[in-house]
Image: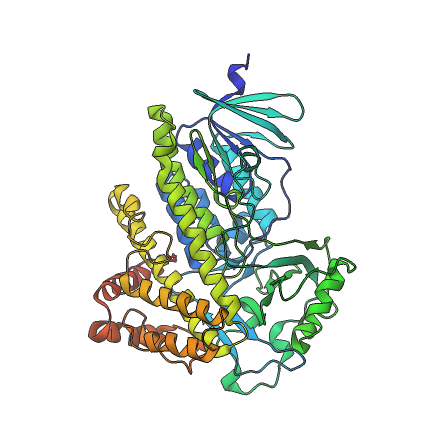
Length: 552
């Protein structure tokens, strides 16, 4: 007989960012939550770079579930004050293309500078962030159970019994598995696809280091036209090469930080860059980066401060992510690649979609899979979308004209999706009607960054079709690029003053003069939906700025 103290409404396996955010949201709203983890905080975790949507998804969780503490994560300044001086700044997404044996070509770079008027992005020092959110969940009322490993989970008509390797037992009416790749529920129900359903292939290796050479110091004498509007090292640096990329995520790139470390790593296609079992991880890393002179210089002389991690193929997928009384959340269900930093943004969305349904299910005592069908459909569609955009990026890395087009599809799709989500949050903040946030789940193109715009879907599908044709050898990379640019140069749903339709623009920096030109362009030429959204968002951003707040 399981004691009353060991009985819960919801058991969450995995107390990382996703599990802890969900636990905090549920507990703050009266749900009795058991928050389980096989490890203990603080600890290392991957997923250190954010995108604007990451912040907005967290702001929605904070407002919707009465978790104002969570907004701490949305700005560098608040993270520094409330958690500690261990975070880096992120003022842009920067990409530099490389070829074997050659110095980096300054004409083959891209940077999208995220305007300070809209948000204040940062690099997350995950061991501190995850511990902060876990402790928030406990303060909200979750019962923590760390260093507890799941041996088995038995389901019946009234709930689930969770058995620990130590012989202890707990009972819950519903189980959320937020543990990641080694999901106990995926193993129990044999949910993993033997061959992942995704096009993309990659493996990865990574660590934290001290003594990194700042990216800008690699080229101190570049001509002004090749110097980005914001220093490379003040954002997330992506070194691209044929079917692979290396990252530089600095935690030491702002005066607010006292953290001397930098996150580095490689993600490569194992079909092109197979793992050599005779090499150590460091040797494998050096073998690949050593082929590219300027990448080699960036990483030369660093001192790892923790053990290297090396993976086999990163991609995995699940036949099903929702069942009666259980759900696989985010990375317990599937994973694609860290490129484009979708991980935490997707997790925030998944928490938002699941939490309100679980709160209602607990009240109604109805945990049937049908209630959570949207979660099933959305998660599968979202991972499919991520697979398509990441596969397109990897395929385009070695062809700069094609890459520039893919880059634009990713940047604007994700940015407009962020504006769309923020608009729903603004309406909710004004009247407290949760329907505004539920309306964000609607859209005929489920899983897309911008799920309710036919023009963007056409552009995205044009990208996928041409990437697939190029990979199949049916067309050249130049042909694929020209097909994409033919669509890009005619669209009216990307703000022209930013440079989206101009293939000669490498650095996008929407500072006040550009934003002013955009307002004029929107009024005269812009897509009506985009015009309404951006002008309204601009007015709100200015209004919030007066009180030292950000729209994102």
